[in-house]
Length: 182
Image: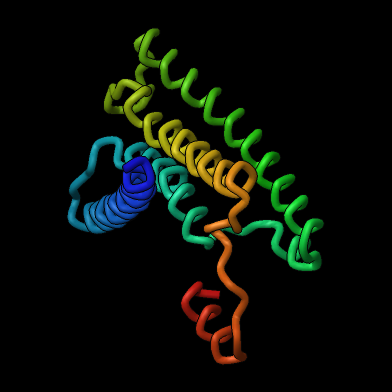
């Protein structure tokens, strides 16, 4: 049950990131077309930047769990067996530490913005904690995803779920490169 909840959380974060990507498209098109026809979206640039931050941070956990996040694979792939496991654990601990540090401070910043009633200084007086939720929420979900993998790899002794198996043929290498947009 917990596994299904966590997988749903990561998928939700990925879909939320996709929603904010579409919102960026709509806002940018509205701003561009609006300039030509004399229509202005109040604080359109502010909303676009808030959507961009939410998209970037909410997409982190889903990207990590899908095995698409850039990692230290070039270093780790040179090792086998126990050495590889040690470097994998070291990478997870280091990533977990950074994700936890940033998630904590982002959550504190969002909470303080709520407590102090901080308001954006732009055209639309938006309470700052609202757009900060995407940033802090994305980092918290990334921390949860990394903790989930830490438990899976270190405490249960399983291979990482975020690591894709090595390609079996030259065609598979090309397919993966084409699918990743490289």
